[in-house]
Amino acid sequence: MKHLISPLDLSVSELEEVLNLGQEILKNKAKYSDICKGKKLATLFYEPSTRTRLSFEAAMLNLGGKVLGFSSADSSSASKGESVADTIRVISSYADICAMRHPKEGAPTVAAMHSKIPVINAGDGGHNHPTQTLTDLFTIKQLKGRLDNLVIGMCGDLKFGRTVHSLINAMVRYENVRFILVSPNELRIPDYLRQEVLVAGNINFIETNELEKYMPELDILYMTRVQRERFFNEEDYIRLKDSFILDAEKMKYAKEDMYVLHPLPRVNEIAAEVDNDPRAVYFKQAEFGVYVRMALIMTLLGLS
Image 1 (spheres, one colour):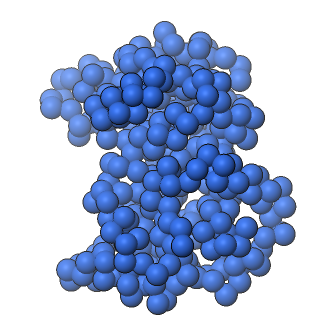
Image 2 (cartoon, helix red, strand yellow; image 1 turned 135 degrees about the vertical axis):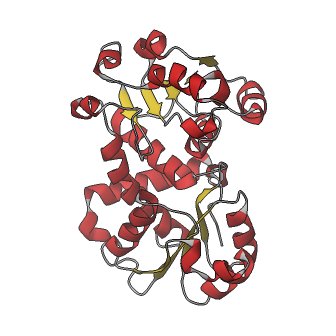
């Protein structure tokens, strides 16, 4: 039995199989509409979610399966003190596969240790968000036709953003990928990611707080929110926040085939005027998330 706790749980070849299956589903949805008939997905979401939870539910329903679960810790026995280990032991008797989001890093790992069914990490604290990474990779491959030989810009909160950490870990396995990491000094990538992944892997990367300077070089721009609550004082936030808002003026510096991704939700880091730019693909990215999760569910259930 296989779980997906980290994007590295899938080898590059396994990852390609999931992405290729997602492409097949996208081309022929009707072919897969009954493949999970009689199967149940449990969604255990201990913290709020819109896209991730609903896309998992849509994925299972699209496959002909059923969904059960809860959408907050308050509506589960966690509010009574039940452990993750005990919860998953029980859920294993009710469902065939489980997607879990939890505020504590490592909680899905604990669940996988005690589960009789495949566990999918749907986000654990600031650690990993592997199905968002699968969505990001699927989107990049669909639009650029490749996952190697790319210059990827990441902008915003790179310190606490679990989507950024997961995507870097996944992309370093492909050849000739270069990162432009744009953030305030206070929100640069964590030291472990810099030293143990980028430096140790001899990956080409630049850390900067100048977005416009590097825009012409990018193949992909991955935007995230600069979070006011991460700053020590309001003055620093006000000084820096407008430097990291993507607007139509900044988009003028980008290549015609550069695409803007965002894991969502967006606040004000991408101006609404950018939505009409054909290079803004974050809503298409959210749609793609359903197909790649359909492919993952099939793969972990041995139905692919």
